[in-house]
Length: 309
Ligand code: NDP
Image 1 (cartoon, rainbow, N blue to C red):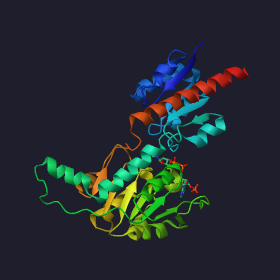
Image 2 (cartoon, rainbow, N blue to C red):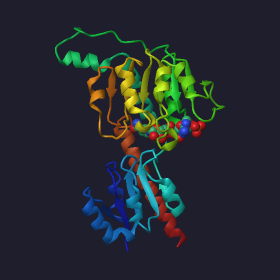
Image 3 (tube, protein in one colour):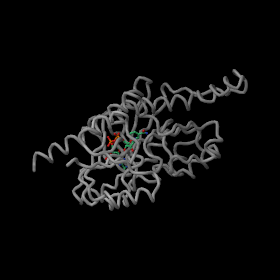
Image 4 (tube, rainbow, N blue to C red):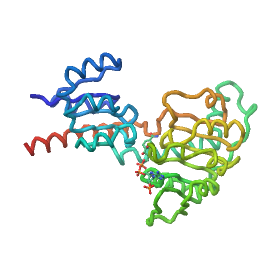
């Protein structure tokens, strides 16, 4: 009998073609009532869950899949995957680490440049027929101080790119990295105070929730620019909006928001805010590499499972 897999989130286009001939694929309906009806029918037969980092694996869904063996998720974030519930049940949690590092780092640099050089505002002006009319000057990026919150795979890739901009680089995370020469700050406020750009690239979840609070933004100061490519939950968003409105920081460039896809009107109204829709990993190359990893995680798991029977 074919192994049943459930698709609970949008996937790169190369996942289903690799699995549909070997597994029975079922798609979770978006409508909650229809989803519950399907799960009542086939939930116990589902052995693999295909999802993505944003849609995740909600607790109610995991409860409806008592025989689940593996979650294969497109993305590196695990904050929506309920790992503390999955792992004690022996469910393997597979993600797609590594393959999106370069694109997210490129995206962080693009956001730094777009924000500091006011590129989006300049572009909007040109399209509105205003050329240089009412166009304030931007600020230089080269040589400015870069602070990175989370010098992991992506953070290090951002640092490597920033070196080409002659930026002095510092970072904060829980542990000093002995393999890098960048300055380590054991406090985030200390890092923010020593930075012109603060790039946030820590994982989401309770440990980092609202870490970038009003005190951190004040330490970054009126010349400082916040770039967030990590998770929206890491920044105290109402406090960020206030800090931008009051000129307590210069600008923000945000790829991620609290409560996506809801975008607060206040952010949309400000010229010094650059917004992208959780998009820094959004290249064709990365999507296909992520899709390959999602499919491989499933194929490897079930070929091993078959081998142990
Ligand atoms: P890594 O695991 O390689 O790095 C994460 C870093 O964050 C580590 O160096 C870790 O250091 C630090 N960190 C973790 N927890 C804390 C904490 N509580 N306080 C301070 N520092 C912390 O992950 P990646 O670099 O691959 O990815 C980072 C995050 O980027 C992902 O978890 C995801 O949320 C986000 N992301 C966003 C994407 C987008 O499209 N915008 C795409 C991909 C990822 P230490 O353990 O020493 O604290």
